[in-house]
Each structure stands twice: as C-alpha cells, then as structure tokens.
Amino acid sequence: MKDYHINIFFSQEDEGYIADIPDLAMCSAFGNTPAEALAEVETARELWLESARAEGKPIPEPTYRPVIYQLAS
Image (cartoon, rainbow, N blue to C red; front, side, top):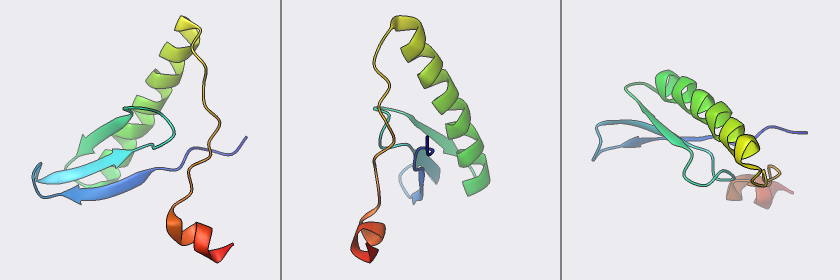
C-alpha cells in the first residue's frame, strides 16, 4: 500500500503551518514550522487510523493526487 499524501501550507490567519491528509476526513495538524506540522500530522494520522480500527470504521485507500501530478500523467 502506498502512503497518504500530505499537504503543508502556511496559514496567515493561524500564523503557522497547517498539514492535512485529504484522504482522511478532518485529519490535520498545526505547527510553527513545516517540519513541526508534518510531525504533528503524522501523529494525527496514526491516531486517526487507530480510532477507525477500534470503532470498526472503513479506512480509505490513499487516492488523493495533487492536480500537478494528474496533469503529468
């Protein structure tokens, strides 16, 4: 299985970096640096997957691809 795509972007409103995983609903994290946001969202991903397994909820396959990769195909 391939891994989930992670977006990282600067949020002017939050004055920091947001990282999110589009394939996992509501799975995002904040950091003061891109590296911090990435580390936080990796933790959030593991907790999201753990919770889904514990509750017997379906775990989506990683399918999200940014538009730039779709255009290159």
